[in-house]
Image (cartoon, rainbow, N blue to C red):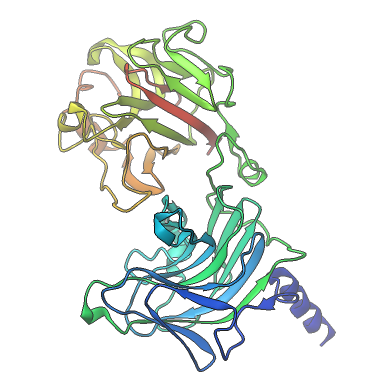
Length: 445
């Protein structure tokens, strides 16, 4: 019995329940107020939000604002399904779209996409941690039963769990404080009216916060050129220090280019029209995972080339000899319509495989003049993944017959064993257009 008591006490300390305050008294909506026209009522000890047609997203929000906290609650949907979420560190101010609610949201997503627990920036940046970044988390939320959520917001560390299982780990310092809100999402027609989302057992801890142990999932760090201790523990390191040319040199040989590149304001920038030349890493890599932020201007063309073995390949018209993750403004650069079936578009394996799909939605769909996220996973068995803005857009095996067949119809058809080198450098391309890079990180696999 004593062992059981100690185990329960340890679990309470971990979850923050021991000193947590009740945000909802189970009887009234005291301490809350509505922003929007959805219906919120207390029914059998739970807050029930119900959809109504013809109104925008609605929120029942706390009167108080909170910075660092651990929030736990139970949520259930029985009529629907309908998208929902829980806001935190959120705001409604006259200066922002006449009071529109905006801020972090832990998603409640009963759709086939199943991104519940992912982190969304409502009415602002959109998806910050899509559910696809942690596929195991998409199996957790269940429509028609109570689900237990935990949200930790401690400094820039934002993490979510469903039923004790990890879902998302975001690092972001854009907003430090704001209200908590319960969302009823807008619906498209009268037939979707009456869909319900219910919340109960809303407990908030704001003092003596004890973070849960590491989640061992992908960490999405939005702080430029920052390497968090959790990332280091997973093997990540900075491939560019954010300030100098250390670790990089001209692809043509010799030192870092004197012209054509600018290293300032935490970004590695290609200057348009100067043609300083491509740059490559001093190191060579085999099996690795690479991620970086990039920004393209209108009509820009560039690329991330990996497993590079030569700065140019005469057999393919002088192109760098390596695999290329295409960077492009698809809407305004003619190369997007060249090649075969879109295999020169953003995120594609240049001139060989097109990206599989282009997810829509704020923070997912590519935009010019906006920082976006690229990720390349290159394994020893030849399997490769391309990711764009948190969503996998391409998977192939560079040692497969399918890959060789695609190469045979590309501009690299006359290059022996193209793309099959065991190791190579990483190249950032100067195509003469304004492109920027930052937060370049790599880890060995």
